[in-house]
Image (cartoon, rainbow, N blue to C red; front, side, top):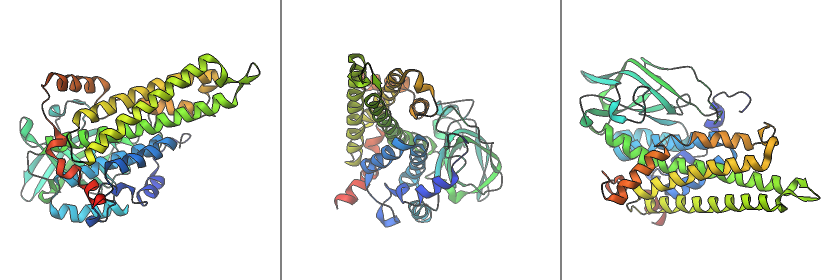
Length: 370
């Protein structure tokens, strides 16, 4: 994967066939119904070995979220069993090149034409862009915040295309590319929720699933960084003893261990609350912030412990470092998380998506307990 930098279609499909994409899907639709803690375990374990494949699963979960929370009965019956069985990899497409994280600045459009909508525009940084079978696309159907709507767009629809895959710094094997809509005709039945529900679709998927999922990816990468560095420092000899015996190295390892333990607590505490259907927007923000920042900090410390040999592609530490930096931007950079946490402290936060969607968010846990 690192050598070719190509999209891993086959490996993505093999993972989907395990049923793990259905971890939060109700058993009535063939899912595991195991909830967000179980989902975090799956993503952490995959990311510990491959940040790219952990990212693939987390991105699919964003696609699952929009159908669980906003899909009609027919849409759920049609797509959730397919996703749970591994026959469909879903995505969500919100970001545009000209607006970035400013959702209301998007310019891609859909206009009604009889029993269809016609989509035009492009979306960028779409996780699973080149392996996805069903894209959840948020576009503008009118002015203002009520003028955004979301649609399910099958990857084989005429008028839909993909820009060529462009490898990035890290997460080699994962695709997060550009979707292009050129008079792409979509049935009105593919509308998610009602016309005007696009903003809630985008925000709830990002806040409830995106932050939790990316937290799990960062946690798995962080765990790999710590384990690899401990193994290296224990095996490498300096001055007649393991490198790990040097006080300066012990200090670095101690800080990495502490950072990892704290990050893991924030991650699992947040998703436990989510499984219980309790308000946890702030906890999810903090989990993403703490896990991403601590993973990047530990990556730098690990590179310092490895010194020059850490630059070699013969060792995985440089891959872990590159992969860790990929988790910074999606679902809000650390600056965004801090801004939102400040609003929480000041009592000026604008919404609590975990409270609004508590019944659905906790459904997986309820199914397991029941």
